[in-house]
Amino acid sequence: MIKYLEKDTDFNLEINKENILVDFYADWCGPCKIMGEVLEKLNEIEILKVNVDNFPNIAQEYKVMSIPTLILFKNGQEVKKQIGMLNESELKTWLKEK
Image (cartoon, rainbow, N blue to C red; front, side, top):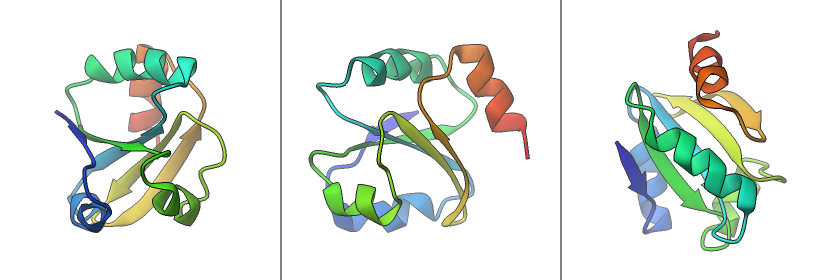
C-alpha cells in the first residue's frame, strides 16, 4: 500500500509502525518517477512517500541529500537507507538483507 504524507505531524505516527518503507522523492525528479513505478509493484511492505519539496525539514532531519532515497523503519527506528534507484529484484533483495 502506498500512502502520501500530507501533514508533517503525521510522519512520526506513520514511521512507528512495525515495518514501513519511506520514499523521499520530488515530482520533478526523473529517477524518482522510475523508482515510484518499481514501488507500485511492491506488495510486501507499506510505503510512505515524502515529497522533499513539501517537507524539507523531515528530509533534513534524516539527512536526505539525494533523491530518490529509501529509508526502512521498524517501530520508529531507522533500520537502513538506500540512496538512488533500484530495480524490482534489487529492491526485494535490499528489503530482505539485515
